[in-house]
Length: 127
Image (cartoon, rainbow, N blue to C red; front, side):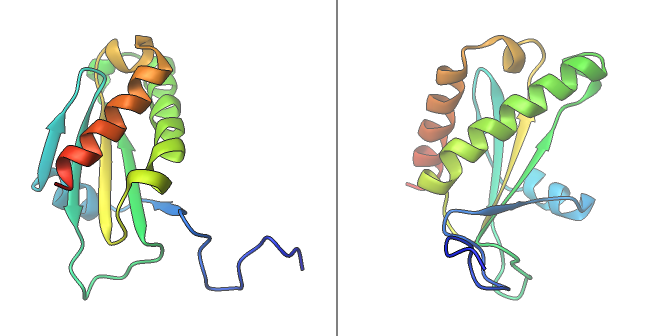
């Protein structure tokens, strides 16, 4: 066993799982929202009786307004990378986050700006 891997059943610190169930996305859509130039952040605190999996869960979505499949996939890749960089630091355990891509902006804004926007949005959200 590699020493850096967590024991079975435990998540590494700062790890998050990806939302896949439509119901989770719908619950997040009814919760708090923080609009940003590059994307929309939706977030909600999970109820104590909900299964956790990992402390932080995140979902990514881009509608056809963002563009064709190539454009949507590029936007989602960028959203995944900013989540991977920012959520372990600024995210809160027990929360679900959904990042919604915006037409043209998600794929074209500088990557550092997207990361800074997500950090700022999380600080605003968790005040």
